[in-house]
Image (cartoon, rainbow, N blue to C red; front, side, top):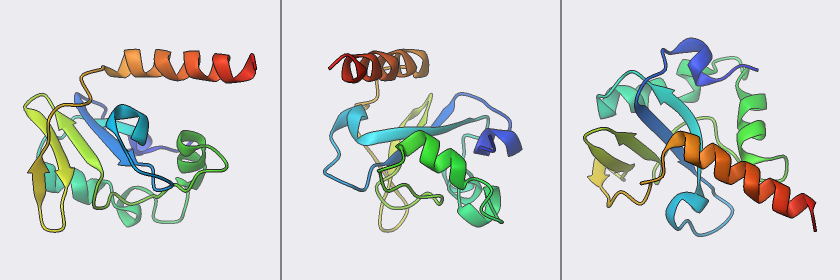
Length: 125
């Protein structure tokens, strides 16, 4: 499946897209879209625009996979989305970026495990 990491080298910078179908609180309100080697916020923002990583719509399946078939996902990074680097956590603002408390203190491996546990609980209902 085509994802941003099919094009860009993975690294320690995490790109989290906000779910647009409700109010976002903490990690539950976001979807991990990519891990990148790039740490410059402006460059990461440019890299995560749809025309950069998915110019022909090839990333649409990745967006649906990450957000789920019934959720509204977005290809391009936009206001409210999060970039988490080793230096800090930043939200895309109306102009530039704002530093936010690290509500994403859970790491990627723990997040993936959490998602699996939530899915297992949903399926057992």
